[in-house]
Image (cartoon, rainbow, N blue to C red; front, side, top):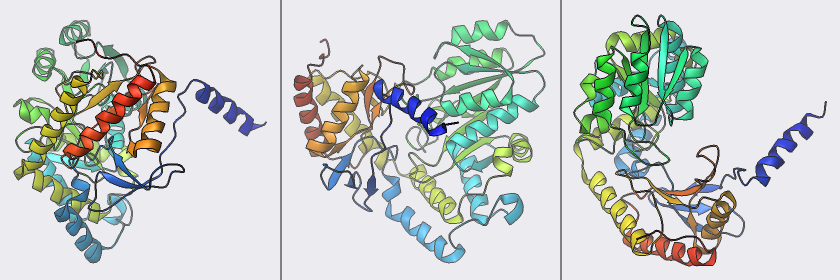
Length: 404
């Protein structure tokens, strides 16, 4: 069999459709975020990164960096294996205590990534709870979809952010089934925020377990960074809150929080936890420092909100269409995969601006976009330069302007 021929045939089709992914080779510069060194041919040596999920620049925070250095010197680099085999490092325990406190829960459990925490937790809940039915918002993340699929539990899709549709579908299920309602707070591609109170009330009405993904909200919303559930005062009514350490906290890793029994259940039955090498202690310690800092400092969140609003206002002033949403995510709509890739390439080559094109299957065909995430460390001059570049390219590419 000519396997490479089969691989290349599908890759060629992806390229023809304009959906082939190209990874930009960049090098983050310590203390210089959002500036990065580019290793891409025909691009400036230094570029401004506009699509990072290090939303608050905490990966550059001096306090977080210092803690990681100190723990590397005291503990070494790796964890040595799974927590079952090599033992649970003290820094893992401290991190889980910090996360439980963040969400007002009894316990927390740390995984190697947010993808793994979703995949492992949903697959375990769906496969081990009796007569489980998972009701999933239609725009849930791929990690949630994979976890649900792997569980082999019955799956029901409900309309995006539609509590009434969820209510109808829960009402149609047998009373004795174990109902799990899975949804997100901030959706990463459109930047919309769920009607959390209404969803929780519907789930409670039907005795359903609530599974909330807060990965694009933790650190950013709520007085201590506990996410939309903290901001809305709903954390205590949600069964399981899942989050990440790899976005606003600037590190890596994922986690779930909930009751002591729930976390012990996942610790004991989830293969995605049991058989995976643990996070390095230095990473756990750095994440703990980042969470502690954002529990008491609101400066980063305020500065980010200011820059988000400034970018939105400038885009409006020039008629550049972007999705109107209440979050920090600004999708600028292109609606064509080839033009989306072309705009991204020109911004990098001619202006030193890096933003990754978002194409199918991440978003539906015809909704291709450039996704901007302003941080507290993007200057006013950075924003002005970005919008001026977009305005020039909008005219050159004959793209539609926003309707006033």
